[in-house]
Length: 315
Image 1 (spheres, helix red, strand yellow):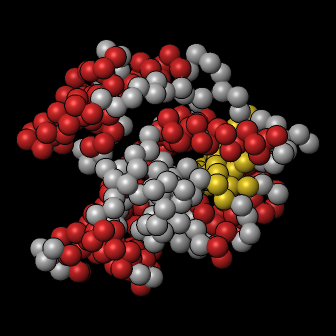
Image 2 (tube, rainbow, N blue to C red; image 1 turned 30 degrees about the vertical axis):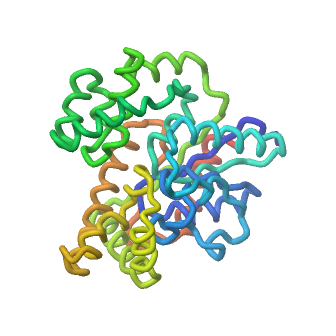
């Protein structure tokens, strides 16, 4: 069967089991994985961003992982260009791409074929906005965006200052909001025949416990050394520096917090991030959810995925 425009997406919150499910499904379908993670794109930062190891990949090719320098900027438009190129190549080879990740903006923009105006950053304007953010605070900048583009503002957290400032910058430059740009870009239909699969947990505390355990494993695997190396080399850009697991350790490195306090901060911020991911994904009614409990293993998730694929006559 031709797979020239088929696309499967596996999405959900962090620590839900997307990586192992993606690998398992790819192996059974002869597919390849295309990452949709805004932090796993960076070189290094392997532990902080929970990149799949070679062992976890199980010889399944993974794309768009660890290929951007940590000090470089990287936009949604950049991701879309790279992801579309990889997917097009796989389709030419009659290979099914499985997009796996938790960055909702990457996934929805890819699936809906959104074309971003690749307006070059105005450095003087960006510096002015950054100075205003330092003086007024992130929440004030988000409120400013809320006035001009409430829809975009509703999808952003005050900590996501980069995207807040980028949205303000684009509006200042063009007079057109990001939301309006998206609306215009959707006039062109998506080239993909897409099936969206999601992983969630019936009991939120089960997901949170998975997150806590994963942070403990990351600490045991060398997260402190990885974060300290990045901190001492001062090699992170505006975007990569936002990776959870790096910025929360800075107070510890600077003697302003204990290690236990820093680790608890990582866990708390990761749980908050998972909540925001779920809020984003639950708005998309196309997602076919597999709801797990504490006893659900990868094979059970894959069994449910296969049932959904069969029910939709997708392959």
